[in-house]
Image (cartoon, rainbow, N blue to C red; front, side):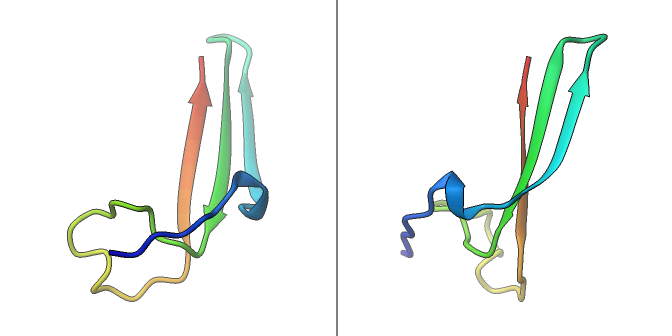
Length: 57
């Protein structure tokens, strides 16, 4: 099993959405690292970036 130490400072922020109607903020980042517990089949496939979004409500 792979384990990487990847802090958010090493994941560039490329997306920011402020929704004033629903009072939510969404941040989008990307990393070349897989998560500690990837989806089945992710490790066998070729990839170069994992994009993820975090929404604060």
